[in-house]
Amino acid sequence: MKTSILLSALLLALAANTASAQAAPGSSPLEYTYRIDSVAGAGYRATLTAFHGPFQYRDMPMTPQGCGASAGSPVSSAAELIVFVQPTGPIHAKFRAPSTSGGSCEFVTEFDLKAEDRPPSTQEVDPEMPGQGQKPRMKEVPEILDLSAADPVRIGRTMTQWGGVAVIPASQAVLRRNGTCYFPYSYLSINAGPGHAEGSSNALTLGAPDGPLLALDDLAAQLPMSAATVSGRIGLPSGLSLVVLEIDAPGYVPETIAYNNVRRVMVDVTGSCY
Picture (cartoon, rainbow, N blue to C red):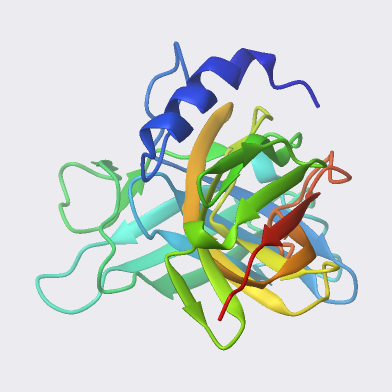
């Protein structure tokens, strides 16, 4: 994966130790996006996500309605969401997509918005009958997504590249306890594809992707061609340790390019952690 387009912005973000970074030069802000997945033996599932907050609705089963013997498959590009704003109580939403079978056959899932969520700006379905439902603007997620981590990675006060070796004196630890040195870390998690990536989690583990968990960082949704700074604290013993990063560790985001989701760095902690 090439990251040269983003490199200057990424280095600046790390140097400034920013909490997060989102960049999509030349693009207008999107509200939220959706995708429909075919799940073997389980029909179709819808996922809706947004850039503006915690609007994350993942893997919702879609039920065929008004269909005959053959329901066909949903026409994803024609899907729409209708929200029903009530004077009190939760906001109800219906996500639907017409079927390739035609007629009144469609695939539908309904849900209530979480209490902390608010729908994006909408247009009345029928302006002469307010309250009959509103249609938020949506965009279907392009198929190509590419999540990865950019160089450099910082552990303690040492910067190195993924795949490199970081030699860190134990004296840089912010805490030393029972033979473990605790160091702050930061790196940039990037979405280098043209699709909107819904929120997920990155994992730092010891030795291998399925090794002992050092840190788990939740990520918000990411714009295409954007970067988000991830930071926290990990505990390492004296000597050599292999720290492994797995981007999108739960596998929430479908990617066309997924081989670059695992990165590694060797950390050599010199001195005593007692």
